[in-house]
Image (cartoon, rainbow, N blue to C red; front, side, top):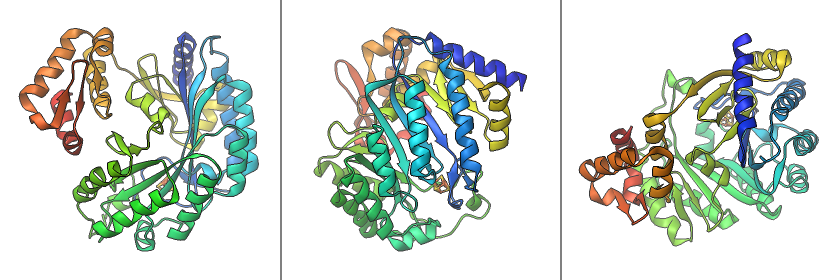
Length: 389
Ligand code: SF4
């Protein structure tokens, strides 16, 4: 616990040293039930648990508020999970008004909430609108009942349509998460999901390949019949730009001006204050994680307010290479002036030389001021990262 206390104070001091904007990530770890492929920190919601959790979150917010300087304010807020819509509209009203009172938030901040179709309602949308939420990111995964059943999701396609419609009619910028590489998935059914999302009026789509990582139920006995994701991804790269969506990041497509500013902060290694059990943050070149269990989080926050359980300082060449990989995820790529100013010309030259020598020429493009991946480069990005790190 003493270790948690000193790490939390160190992160608090880094927050206090900021002289500009920062982002805030808040983890809401409750779900209706655990999906078999899920390795995120999430627990089934039990009565009374969310109330206790919100009290702890408030305590953690107050802990960091004490460090905040005059000049810094949040430019993006992101509530992720878990399933944030497991909180009731009344709990949202309470949490958002508490945040407004205790964290300075820019008047033009982007405020995103993740929503899942089985628990998202018009009442959530009404509270969020009143409290300046601007984006809703919906865990659709698929508009095919068969896919959703196989994934063990608690919603069906009609519930997914209803959720997207509610968010669009509520006046939010709406993103849909869609997943490929599912059992017996065909290009036709994948295209159907993408087209349904566009037809419902989303302005952002995040595409993910189903991955079965350590810590999930399927990890010990992976299901058979999963499809190769490459054709689905390739088709999306061809189709979405024809509908006005640009691929601004490896897994993200949006209409003009509708990219996620919060996620972009991660790719630019901008400061992120992570709050809640299992949350990650990045402040003052230190990456940190909070206690990853409800019990650990509760006892640490009750004891002194913070909950940082682990921290890694990333600096020098390692930081530069990490930054290059993150920037190359995006359509903007590596901006030469800003990058060399921050990390030095030598490391920039080294990364450029490596790519020119070892990567196929049609995987990246160079302009006078920057270097970025082409759509083909994004398809083989993992191989390119291994050249850089
Ligand atoms: S809804 Fe999301 S966070 Fe919750 S168990 Fe399923 S995949 Fe995990």
